[in-house]
Each structure stands twice: as C-alpha cells, then as structure tokens.
Length: 397
Image 1 (cartoon, rainbow, N blue to C red):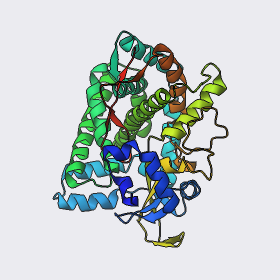
Image 2: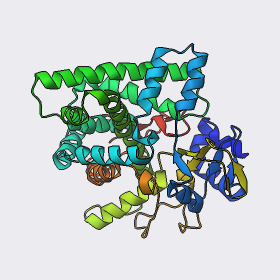
Image 3: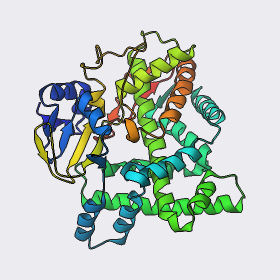
Image 4: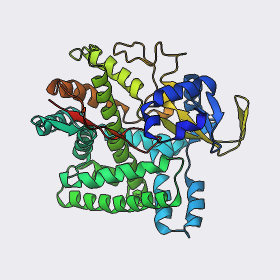
C-alpha cells in the first residue's frame, strides 16, 4: 500500500492501521503527502517538533477560514467560528497560550475528581449490570459525559446535544474537510455558544458553585469569546478523546484477556494504563505549522506549511519500544507521547490517567465475561485523525 493510504477511512484500513503505519514509517518516515503537508512518523522527529516552539507552532486556522468564508460569501457563522477557534488552547501560541493554559489548568483541577469519578463509575455499572449486551462506545460516551457534566454542572438532558457537538466539532481536523462540513461545524459552534450562555444563566439563577461562573468572572465580559472557545475545546476533548481512549482500551483488554494485569497495586495499575495509552493511541495525528521558511531533514518548508505528527506511529517505533506491536502491561520504561510532549502536552492528561486507573479495574471486574459480540460487527468511524469505532457491540455476560 502507498503512503497515501494512511489518510483513507475505509474499514479495512482502520482494522489494520497499526500495520499500515508501521510499513509507511519504515519506508517514508518523513515525507510530503498528497495534500502537500509534511508528515512525520518516527518517534525521534515527532518528539523533536513537539519540543521546538521556535520553528513550529500550534495550527492557525485564520487563513483557512479567510478562504472558506470568501467561498461562502463571508458567512457570519463561519467568521464567528473562526474567532472561537482562535481561543482553543490547541490553536493558541506564545505568551497567550502559556498564560491561558496556566489559568485553565489551575481552575480545571480544583474539582473533587475522586468523588466525581467514583460516582460516575457506579452509575455506569448500575445501568449495565443486568444487561446481556451493549454498545461499548455508548458505555464510554456516557461515562465521559458524566465526568464533564459533574465538573461543570451540566444536566442529564444535555447528553444528546453534547455528544453531537463533540462528534461534529472534531471534523475540523479532517484533511478532506469541505465548505459544507465547515458550515456544519460552525453551526454547531453557534449552538454551543447559545447552550453555554443558557447554562451560565441557569447557574447564576441557582446561585450555583460553578466552575463556569468562576472562569467567567476571572475572564470578564470582554473575553466572552475566549471563554466559549475554552469550553468548546475542553468539552470536546473530555468527551470525544476519552470515549475513544476507553473504548479502544477495553477492546484491547478483551483481545488480550489471557494477559495478567495486577490492577490491585497502584504501580501495576498505573503501568498497565500507560501501556494502553501507548498501544491504542486514540489521537493518530496532531497538526503543527511551520513558523518561517526553513529546511527540515533535507526538505524546504515554507512558512505556514502544515506539519502532521504521527503520534500513533511514533508510539510503535521499534527504535524506542522493544516489541512495539505487542501489548505488554508491565512495560517499563514507557516514554510514549500519547498525550503529546513539552508545552503541547495534553492539559487533561492527569485527569485521563486518573479516570482510566479508576474505571478500567472496576469495569472489568464488574463484567468479567465481557467479549465482542459474535453476531454483531463493530463499525469504524470515517474520521482519520480520531480513528475509532462508531459502535462496538459486546456481550456483557
């Protein structure tokens, strides 16, 4: 298969993606793809770019939206969405990125995550304890929603909207995105803007002890777009990424059911979770941009050139990981970059690790006979950057 195949969303590609990216990494670890983007797939250079803010920056959607807005006759929804994206941590740079990250990180981790996570686990187990079968994606989506809803005070009736918003908004990362898809993202962003405003108003009326209200007060009314962009990003990440990571982790545990994992000790549990993060790498690609004309590994790069960092590929690089295609729950050391690296390290990594360490042992113990449904096949999603299942039927008993 050619290097271009890694951008395919075909079901057979998704099923064999690890093997495919291994083949491409061995033959063309650094290359220009069919879209003219720089693709970097080996661990050494992926990590090098993550750690080099002088030459590579977070992706800037500004130019993309200028072009698309012009095509769409300067549609106001697109322009508002473009402005909102400027305030996503993933697309901020320099001092603005550092300052905003520090503030959000401090407020985000003030919640009582022990209680929040324990309560969410109990709710999920109680809901599915007596069921014979279920969709694993649905289970993990419900869990991820329970976590973010308890953190910022959402209501159970908001579930469908949050899931739709989180799913649609990640389309912005797809390379084949067209004007119609961008318009759908922009419309969802507009709906989220209204939804967040209504939620804040409800919290104010209820005199709630609300993280949303605290951040609104800190930022002030002049930074409302920054507040909206912040929570677009956080809600999306806490919902979509967590769903993918947990779904694929449980699928991996089912596949390797005979592999012993010592969930009962902190070290055994923590080390196994790190291996799952490396092994499944739910976010396949992270975009960066070239800051100024430069040369990289013999390639001449122009300012603004898109750089795609292959996290899933780097995490299976045999130059760093012995027997990288094998799930080894006792693997140590394990210098994976499943949550990024350096200043681009995922802000929610600590929470994600905590959720996995608490959820997986309890869930697998509650459903010891869980297995893939023998008569109902799973369906892969069409997304490439966030490659995962759209549904994955399992038998619970």
